Image (cartoon, rainbow, N blue to C red; front, side, top):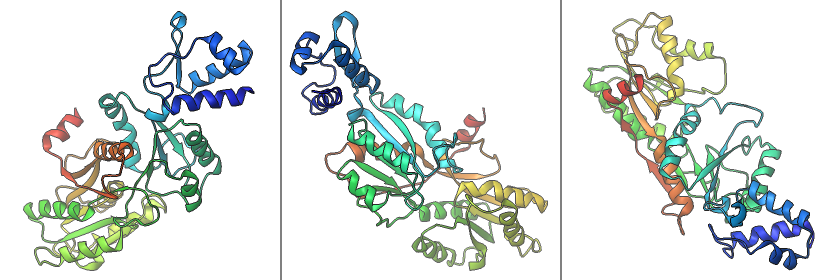
Length: 357
């Protein structure tokens, strides 16, 4: 057998369970005879399997399969950005995921993660998708988590039945056949609005991501029509934080808050925390102080990626919930549910103070 064939055959014996985690490989002379290969060629195969974390050398005690080989323990985190970017995309969720990973791995020491920056289904980075698919075919991954996009049908076909989960903004995502995790944005809005009403809000404006699903916008508009506060349709603004010049976004918010004190919004709900700095900058340009002149309740991902503003009420989706639910789905014999709807949580003053320390 040639060296690549020996490498593949040994890898398959590990993945199949013939050589289970922690087990010792047959002694070297036995394997050399079995594969009819030179010592140097065989060592190249062993070195590659050690590099891939399938094997570890115990010196005189021989070669063993690692306790956590990649086909059981290594998970792909796939983000819609370019591979030459050192940082994650300009979205606090991605950075909060990276921030939370050490704590999550401390709870699950048997798993580890690899980042892939593949672009999106509409603008894919072929080399990164090829790396992802190659790692799947080599048994170097146990599962894949796609963040805010699903791969193309072609990629889905190549992945076959390999365990995958999609973290999606769409509550009715139909672009794939995978289980997906989404966010109860309507409940988030309700909680934000209740807090502002408790604080005396009379006129409430709303900022959402422009890609928020139409069904959720309709539900939000219905909640606004209960007469408890004034929120006309034109006070619900959709903005992209990823694209466009910040000054133009600030201009829209300034226009919204440029009326007389008794006519403009006295409160603001921000349903995507990436829009919060833009909103605060726009208010500052008008001489309005968040928490004083304008009450603010905002979405956030937790743990906080940046220092939270003390004058803002935060309602969060916990990154730990995203990772834990993804992990449970990927390791289940059958998915628990095709859709998991994550619930928001209120952040207490104590939690904010602990972060600010």
